Image 1 (cartoon, protein in one colour):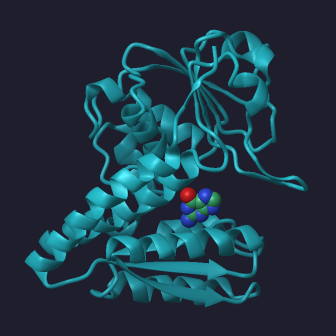
Image 2 (cartoon, helix red, strand yellow; image 1 turned 180 degrees about the vertical axis):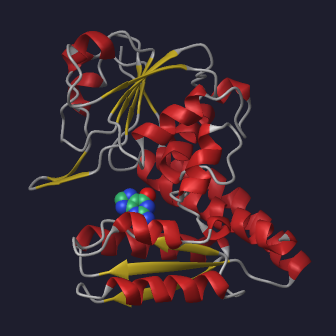
Image 3 (cartoon, helix red, strand yellow; image 1 turned 90 degrees about the vertical axis):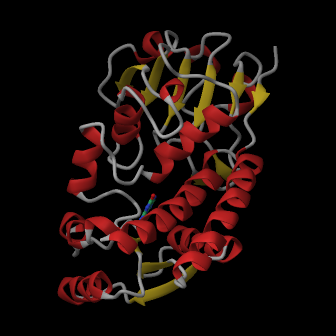
Length: 293
Ligand code: GUN
């Protein structure tokens, strides 16, 4: 059996078309264009690519974006002062600080400084706490992208065993919280999973991954999920974006795993386009929240 391809580019296109209409309606009703402020510190090549693609996507759906570029050696207090200014600006609805930050900056202090109502990455402890309690304000972008790709790809999660490999604050942990919840904005079929989170210290990883109905790879190591780790008929979502000498590679050995999975996401063209799209969704949601705040 060859897996059905879950085409993230096509699904992101569908959602962006819906968002374009919602943004136009918002502007018509409020006379305000929602605006995302992105902060990029230093010259990290991957970060520059991500920020460029986020801004381009904003433009596609009719959102405004502004980019604040700061030098690699910017003092932490200058970065905090910029965030304070953006928090206070009524022209800015969402604030995104592109990670990673240089080592002299305490990332937690920076992320804590973003106003929770403008926190479109959902990294602020207030928003993480709300997610853990099942009353999210913003859904974190990559986990939300995974839910969307499964939902629109016809893969229900309720009652099924989802194994997540990776426990990061950006993907593994918040995705586990979303899947564990009793409901989701996409309906209860996109929640109510039985969730196992595996990591670098998990014993007998392959035995656990082989028990998955849905396997999510969010490790950051090219091709580390091999065919032996996947039971035939599993739906496989690859969140990995690894730069290798041969180009972009996912965490999954795509060529081998596609022969036995029921569904699979490619890299590139899988979860990546959804992550950016869910950021647009959150920017509009942030603008809506600020109209009533
Ligand atoms: N760096 C890698 N992923 C992300 C993300 O989702 N948001 C931000 N701000 N930085 C990142």
